[in-house]
Length: 100
Image 1 (cartoon, one colour):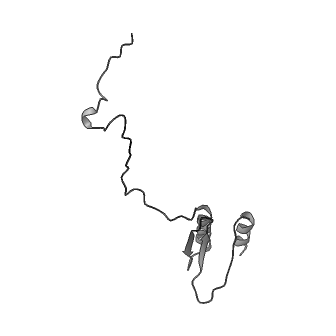
Image 2: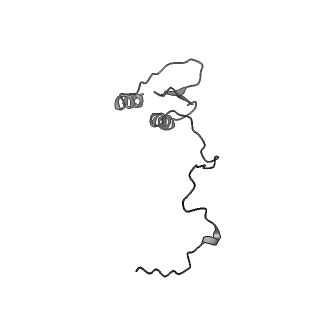
Image 3: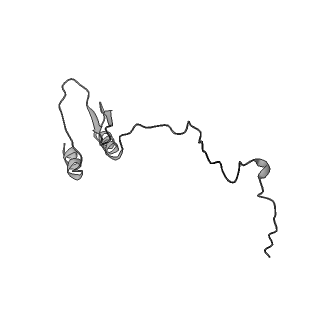
């Protein structure tokens, strides 16, 4: 289609190959310089959805997605301010500061 040709013309650094695979589901495969590959099945998808996946593959790094929220943050240098506790809440207290 003309959309593939237009995308290839606007992104000359990308190698686009279209292959006929009789009896197999269509897919989009992105190969990256880092050596990683991503493959997305586009069976029964409309053209805007396929175009969205092509742009997603173009804008991604190819690395696998990692969940970073499961691991607690550990550090060798604890906070200089110390650990906060409710007893340290000084929002409503008034302080007099005298500079001499």
